[in-house]
Amino acid sequence: MSVACIRHTGAVPSIVIPAHNEERTLGRLLDSLLAEPGGPSGLSDPSASGDSAAPAAPTDEPGRSGSTAGDPSDPSLAPAAPGRASADDFDIVVVCNGCTDDTAGVAAARGARVRVVEIPVPSKHAALRAGDEHARGFPRLYVDADVVLGAADARALAAALEGPGAKLAAAPERHLPMTGCGWRVRAYYRVWQRLPAVREGLFGRGVIAMSGAGHARIAALPPLMADDLAASLAFGPEERTVVDAARVVVHPPRTWSDLIRRRVRAATSTAQLESEQERAARNEPAADPAPPGEVAPGGPADRPSARTSMGDLRALLRAEPRLLPSVLVFAAAAIAARRGAKKAIREGDFHTWLRDESSRQG
Image 1: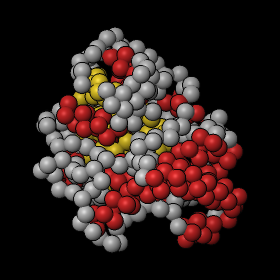
Image 2 (image 1 turned 90 degrees about the vertical axis):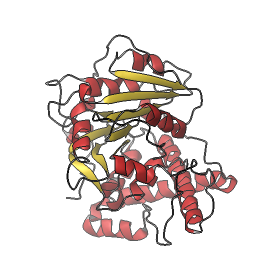
Image 3 (image 1 turned 60 degrees about the vertical axis):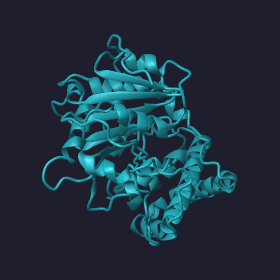
Image 4 (image 1 turned 135 degrees about the horizontal axis):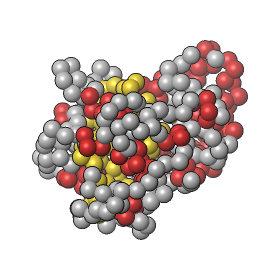
């Protein structure tokens, strides 16, 4: 991810939450992180989502505070991993960036356990840097405001980055509740969740945890739309892990048009990342250079990628022929996304954030 140099150290892990106009979603995340030990600790059965989607494997103002509040009513929002962890185990920083709604108020209402930082610019990159300036410890978790993660899940991620032989980066298993999603959206994710890069990579989960050494690895990355993908590709398979004991709820888009908006953004951001990789391989300055004292990333010609190939889809069909209709839907979405991304890529517009609003509806 695009994060800044370390300013603070400490024994307590930090959770940094960048949030732009997330008053509708931030509360459910904070309530899950702040839930007391002994509260709800299990996701509902994935089959209750109404779809047999694939399993993880194939088969500048700090200090606003107020009263505590909230209890998510959706059972799929409960933290997944059992345990006795609580938010007191963490330093939680919410960075409200360019908000025009009550995101800061939602965060402040959770009390002193949540520190609120406000910056005027609507930029995830700037929010991550501001979060790093205020965060106190490692491991450090970067959590999107529209996902749901429990305290025990966060503790499991931090544990994977501590001790002898610890990994540099970690992410939780993902659960995508499909209730309310159109049939084409279900078909798309039925394929997407089975892809090797999706199962093994740290991207597309809304949560990435870093050790201090892992943070140093990615601190030089330039501002990128695909921050989680760039962070995932910065670590080899032996340096990163998906933690079975942790789970995050990621709400997918409900409509085909919102899915395509999300995929256009993904195609655009992937093109930006690949352009930066090529630039780094030629030892050219980045479009947005790393801050003084940091080293710009380099990469070999055979740099890592998370693109889906026809070979991936053929292998999936050989293993599960019944997925043919879903693969056709997946291919249609990929074609539509590439067409939709052409103008932005041609004009070098890597700043317009096509946001899916359907997944943020109550």
